[in-house]
Image 1 (tube, rainbow, N blue to C red):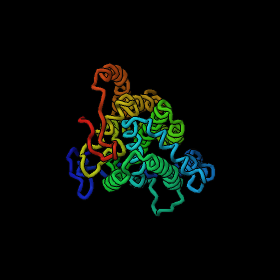
Image 2 (cartoon, rainbow, N blue to C red):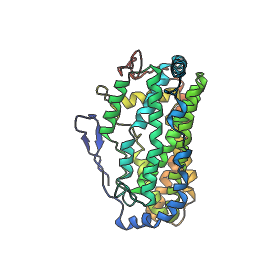
Image 3 (cartoon, rainbow, N blue to C red):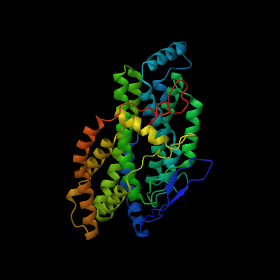
Image 4 (tube, rainbow, N blue to C red):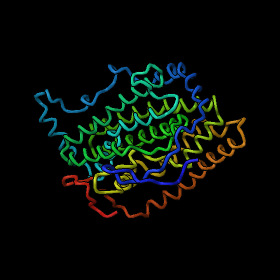
Length: 363
C-alpha cells in the first residue's frame, strides 16, 4: 500500500512536499499482457498519430519573420492582446508552463513497466507511441510560448524560470511504475487538457481574438485525439483484465488525480499552482466540476457499471467508483450554487505590468 509519509523535494528546485511512492507494484506476470498487446497497439493506437508532414506547426499560426509584413503582423497581434483581460493571460501562461514541462511527462511514461522505451529508439509500438506522442505535444508549448513572447504582455524571463523549476521538480502522479495506473492517469489528463484548451479558445473568441482562439482550439483538437488513444488502451485492459483494471481505477480515484504542473514554482510562491488554479476555476477554464465530469465520462466510456465476473475486491472497487461518479452529480449542483456566492476577483501573481509573479490581489 502507498505510504502517506511525505518528504520534501531537495533544492534547488521547488520546496514542495511529494508523497513517497510505491514502486513496481504491478505483478511481474502482468508485464506479459503489455508485450502481448504490441501488435494490437500498432493497429489501434498508433493510428491516432498524424504523419509529421500532415501536422500543423507553430509557425502556421504566427507572424512570418521572413515576411516583409512581419512587423505589421506583430503589431496587430499585440493590439489584439491588449484587449484581453489579465486573468485570462494568467490561465494561458499556466497552460503554457504546463505544456513546456513535456520532458517530465515523457519521463513519467518511461517509468511504466512493460511499455517503457528501453533503448531510446525501441521499435515496440509502446515506445513508438511515447516518442511520437511527445513529438506532437512538443508543438503545443512552442506555439503558446512564441505567442506569449510576441504579445509583450508578460515577463518571459520569469516564465522561463518557472518552467525550469517545474521540469526540475518533476511530478508526483503516484502511478507506481504500473501502466494500469499510468494509462488511467493519462486518459484523465488528456481529457482535462482538451477541456482547458477548449475553454481558453472559447474565451479568446469572446474577447474578440479569433487568431488566439484558433491557436487554443488546434491544441485542444490534438489533446482530444490523444485522449481517444489513451482511453482505448484502458478500454482494452478492461476487456482483458477487468478485475485488475477496476482495482487500478479505484486506486487512482482514491489518491485523486494530481495535475501535471502541481509542483509549479517561481522561486517565490510555494502555492503558485493553487493560485493559478483559483483563477482557472473562476474563469471556467478548468474547474472542480470539470474534474467530476471527467470521472463520470470515463466510467460511462469504459462501461464500468456493466463489468461482470469480478472478484469480491473487484466488485467493491466497481461499487466505489460508480458510487463516486454518481455522488459527483449532487456535489456539482451544490458547487454551482456555492460558486456564484464566492468573492469574484482573484488574480495570481502571473500578471502584469511586467508579469512579475507577485500576487496582485490577495487570494
